[in-house]
Length: 108
Image 1: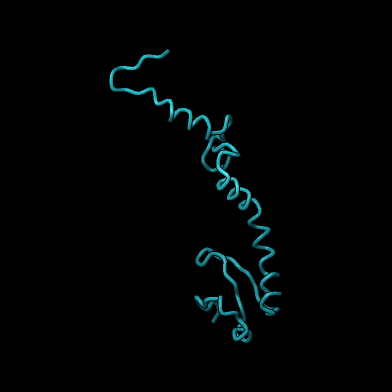
Image 2: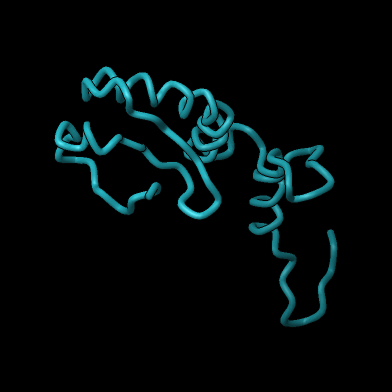
């Protein structure tokens, strides 16, 4: 049994939480996932799994939205200013669904 000076706690509850949450072999930097043990949080596991397939999902979004809207010229793009966006030509703007929100014209 360990002894602690008066007023100090052994923090056993906090230690148990950290041991349950932190992976046995976490990555060396915070730039990588894997610090939190898989299975510790279903919500976090779902976010990590979704992020692994994010590029594939974005790549498929263009085809899905073209089919959904009937706008064959619809494009999904990305830039550092706006992030991801859906581009519709001026000639097809009248076909845009009501759930689309016009933010800005990209071209001149």
